[in-house]
Length: 372
Ligand code: IPM
Ligand code: MG
Image (tube, rainbow, N blue to C red; front, side, top):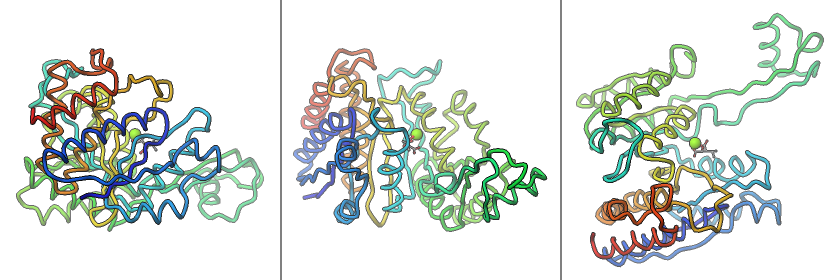
């Protein structure tokens, strides 16, 4: 019996999580485990009603679970950033989910926009650092002539621009990216361990040629960590270059490890080469704590309640969740069933089919039960 927390969230979130639950239940039937779900009403509706984003009580309750199944958040009634930062990022940080695991894999039967590439060419994993970098939320905006004692702002004005912050200042904003030795080490170690289980190649993606303090430290730690893994071939790519190689030579990649913001950007590119956002899952992992599995797409509010959203990314995230629980056979069976549904054409309209969200999800659940 597994206890799993579920947060449907906003927009299409609740619909796609409902499909994911169907499939995980089906996997339980076939592989002999049961799931006890606990639903949380965290999201836009509750926020509008109570002004609560994520409460102490939510965190205390969620902490009791090893895994959370997460749909999506984001709502047009609320200014962008509030829910994203107040709920999704807050959860990742609160549970110190320092690994954001994003497989980029072209499934059988899915069309990629890349010419002449097949499933054997597009099969890698991005390990995105998930708690540091420009996501730490340290920054500020300064109005003209605003008085400040903040050294960083005085330095920016005086040292960099030769201006006096209180007299001839223009409006200025800054945001700080943070990399710590331990933060880099732990996520890179996860990536090396993963590479050892795969094709033994690890690419570090950074921008150490320009942002040489933060990503210089990232690189130093990477070079040191690599010494413990002599059988893993390593490579450094700058983030701008890697966007070219993902498109031109995706077959070069096995495991990619990267700081938070670059990971955010390159995994949307990755989602496209694996067939679209409707097919891209992610896991926010704390190997010793509470982890959270979600599609990487958002809440698509305009499709809410229309039974058109593709549930595959969420169902695949469910497979990552099962893997995390140690149910490796069940996890693999879910991916096989997703592939079956694609080959059989029982897919939503983004993949050229006519099935609704619910029909597509039920079909995958049936395939899992039958071992198809
Ligand atoms: C993602 C999303 C989030 C991120 C947003 C919604 C805060 O883009 O999961 O990739 O930037 O991490
Ligand atoms: Mg993103």
